[in-house]
Amino acid sequence: MATPKQFASHADLKEKEVTFTRLSEHAYAYTAEGDPNTGIVVGDDAVLVADTQATPAMAQDVVRRIREVTDKPIRYVVLTHYHAVRVLGASGFNPQEVISSQDTRDLIVERGEQDKASEIGRFPRLFRNVESTPPGLTWPTMTFNKKMTLWLGKVEVQLLQLGRGHTKGDTVVWLPRDRVLLSGDLVEFDATPYAGDAYFKDWPQTLENVAALKPTALIPGRGPALVGEEQVAAGLQATAGFIADVRGSVEAGVAAGKDLKTVYTETFAKLKPKYGHWVIFDHCMPFDVTRCYDELTRHPDPRIWTAERDIEMWEALEG
Picture (cartoon, helix red, strand yellow):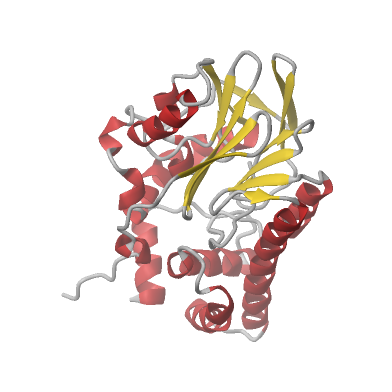
């Protein structure tokens, strides 16, 4: 029996160098060369953390960096969406409240267990010390629809749903006074957007809604923090361009009556020269093309990824 071809992410074993950058009076970015980012807001009386790393053990490095700049309590954790690599570290911060959109909570209910098993199988390096994660899933203690405002003393933090994109529950964290935005995986920079649970049709408009806020600094889901209006615009344009290029190629293939494997092979070949240097390109493309093909054919909403479905898809397209 042939040995199954491993996910491209299994070859990604190199430890990444962490950067902890102050972006404004109240905002910091924890980034790691294309690994998932975390955003930190230090208010007058408390700290807010957005996206938590994949395990509580990994979250401890974020806590250590926070403690280098403030001793204020970490009161809030915000989940920008439901993916395990973003949320399972929440308990490591011991927050008073875990906040998400109601749509994100609904996705945790519907597919959280399957997503957890799937992601741990895809990204072994990102789930170091997975045994440090409490049993079960990370559950929000507070949810909102469309908009929620938190006050950390006199520091205003807006949690906004600007539209569907990476998932249906995407939330951005916006500091209107500082003009700093944390986008979650709605925006990536020098890193390939994962679109396995995406809404390709909606994502471009959602990015325009992000741009309309006119942030002067942006913490993407992956990649370095973007500082200045030019860098922010470049990040938004690069993400929008990738989503449009995937959709355009898949749409042409579907219109020509081609099957998924053919569409995948052609789309990969078209996009590799332009985007192949981005982090996790080889890993994301099968998931991205499969989801886009689904959306353009018979599945307007993303199907649930299970560990078994991951392997079947990978073998069908890459095996």
